[in-house]
Image 1 (tube, rainbow, N blue to C red):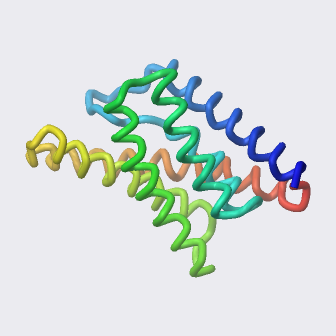
Image 2 (cartoon, rainbow, N blue to C red; image 1 turned 90 degrees about the horizontal axis):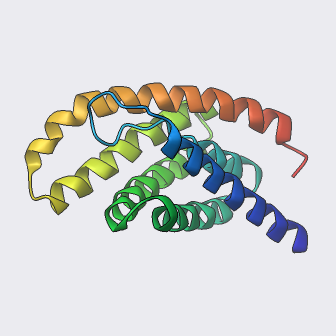
Length: 162
């Protein structure tokens, strides 16, 4: 039990560090909400190496803590909507056993953007935001693919050590 608690603390710290690093990287294409998704590496690692229950707990805690430390209430709302929808899709796709980590990461990146866009359109009461959807889908695919490659390599190296 203590070993698992230590791992959860380590993963939460790692996720917060990734959030902080991502907040420092000037990664803008003129479209609000486009990010690298570095913390998705931690979520995928946990999903594959530790378990889904622990992964969702750390994901939600990271979103709340990072929102309070580096963001604002709206960033928490947007991150929660994207993070929860992304996690749900990655978890369901992983359970099928038919997709590889990279494909699941791509789906997570795309779903994160869809979740955020849906909440944003509700919050600002403007459904014209969906014009951003094509670019957000492309960016979710690209970042999800890159994060998926990194996560796959990490899972291969860490599996059996946790």
